[in-house]
Every structure is written in C-alpha cells, then in structure tokens.
Amino acid sequence: MPEPLQAPSRPAGRELRDAQGRTISYLRLSITDRCNYRCVYCSPAKAPRADLDRAQIRRLLGAFAALGVRRVRLTGGEPLWRADVVAIAADAAALPGVDEVCVTTNGTNLAPLARPLRAAGVRKINVSLDSLDPGRFAAITQGGRVEEVVAGIEAALSAGIPEVAVNAVVLRGVNEGDAAPLVRWCWERGVTPRFIELMPFAGGVPVPTREVQARLAADGVRLWRDAEAPRDHGPAGYREGDGGRVGFIGALTENFCSTCNRLRVSTRGELQACLGGSERVPLAHLLEDGVPASWLEHEIRSALARKEDGHRFLEPKVSGRLLSMMGIGG
Ligand code: SAM
Image (cartoon, rainbow, N blue to C red; front, side, top):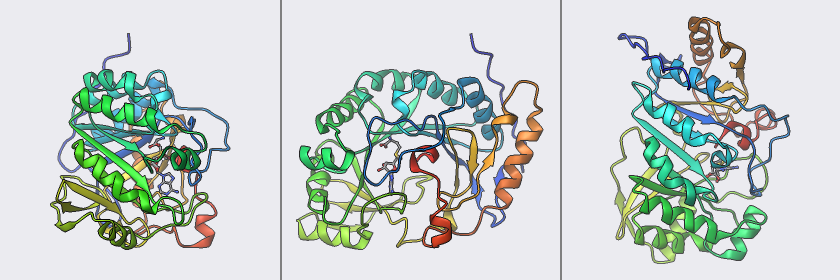
C-alpha cells in the first residue's frame, strides 16, 4: 500500500509567485519521455530513460499542491503507455488543493484507459490529432493509425470525461486543408478543437494562427466572435462558431507570457519554468526519503524567482538549447 498522502497545509501567502508577480497554479508533469509515435515536429529524447517513480511523483505533487498548484496535467512522451498512469492520476486527484487533473495523450492507449482514468478523477483529456486523413496522419506521426486515435476519443466521450479537446498542429504544405474537416468532426461530438502554432523543436514549417483562421473561414467554418475563456484557461484564445468553440494557441505570433500561470517538470525531475527557456533545475535528488520538504520548496521558489518575463523561442542561441518536447512534455 502506498503511504497516505500528506494533506498539504497552505497558509495564506504561501502560493507560488514569480519575479514578475504572476501566480503559478498549473503544473505540467511529463511522466515519461517514451512515445510510440515519432511526429515529425516533436523530436525524440536522446537522454537515458530515468523516469521519476510513483513515490517521487507523489512527493513532488504534494509539494506543489502545498504551494498552491490547483491544476495538474500529466503528459509526456506518451503518458498512457506508462503502466502506473492511472495510479499516478488518482494520487494527483486525491491531493487536497488540486481541483483538476488533466491528461494530454496521442490517444493510442486511451480506449482501454478512459474509464479507469475517469474513475481516478481525471476531468479533462486533450488528444493530439493533426489530420483525419489516414495517409497524412501516418505521414505526420511516422506510422500512426488514425482509427486508433478516433477510437480513443470516442471511448473518452462514452466514459463521461467532462472535457475532451483535440490538439492539432498545422504544418505548411502538409495539413492546412485538414483543419476545417477536423473542426466539424469535433463539433459533431461535443469536442473542442485547438490549433497550436508549431514551435521550433524539430521539423515542419509553422502556419501562423491568423492564417489558420483565414483558412478555416475560406473552407466554410464561420467563427463569429471571441468566446469567453474557461477558468484558468492557459494560453489558448477561443472563438465561437456555429457548432461550438475553437481554441487557438499562437505560441509564437501571439505572445501570452504576461498571463503565464504554469511551470513544467520533466520526466527526469527537472523543473522548467518556461517551455521556451533553457534553464532546467534538477529536483529528483530532493524527492528521496528523508530530505526535508523545505529544501524542495526552497529550490522551487528560487527557480521561479528566475522565471523570465517572456519566452525566448525566437532567439537562435536559446532555441538551439531547448529540451526535446518529449522530455519536457508539451
Ligand atoms: N504524446 C502526447 C500527445 O501526443 O499529446 C503528449 C505529449 S506531446 C509532446 C503534447 C503536445 O505537444 C501535442 O499536442 C503535440 O502536438 C504538441 N507538440 C509537440 N511538438 C510540438 C511543436 N514542435 N510545436 C507545437 N506543438 C508541439
């Protein structure tokens, strides 16, 4: 039996704030850098595999919950191929103070896991799906089968996961024409599609958010006004259309750093305060038995004090040192 979770005490004023005064309440945790897909724009990790184990993850999440993190997203690599993912999700959901546990997945192992994840307390699942066309999907993922992902999404919906979203990256000359069919397909199922601008981690040519919006309009998807953003919505801006909402994450062309409320921890326990920055602060050695919790808290707070006011994606020196998306967790 795992040790009982410590109920984190959170006296007023203990929440995490960075040097710019932003309150950090959202942790994205990569639980593995392994993935069964090799998407052309998402470089595979080169470092040796040494994922945090479940006990280390429980300590890490407990520390962040005590510091005011309310939302935890499990990502990767592909988190749903990790054998103890449901247990990790349940640990996260059981933490006092954490009111939302989410998962980002490629959907290939979602069909058997949707119900267990729902029972574990997962509220939101984002499934990556760049094209419904089997050939283009296979080309982007280097071998993926779109029907497996579709089955995963259908399973999440029938399991009653309260929010299901689809994340799509649009690549110039590859899948621009797939955006409108994807929106319609999502809306028919009550799923929110979100288009993420390509970030410079590996291959592919980005299509700016404004161009994706223009292409959707040209292909008959009418988006008539900005939609109200959901609570703690993160970087996506939403627009309302005839059949539902569409989210746009203009990571490069629409800088939203001033409202950033998030940080990331990699599968090896390295804290990264900004996805588009290059500083990684090792925490794994502070997650062992007997290490005082205050040491971990101190390390987290000092890393956040150095969180910069904006990303550095477009600076060549920094982009060359960006971690792989699989290790950080997108
Ligand atoms: N394997 C899971 C998945 O496919 O969703 C989780 C990890 S994946 C790194 C998380 C998200 O990051 C996916 O939606 C993926 O499309 C996105 N992503 C990966 N590389 C990216 C890049 N270079 N630019 C923008 N988004 C990227």
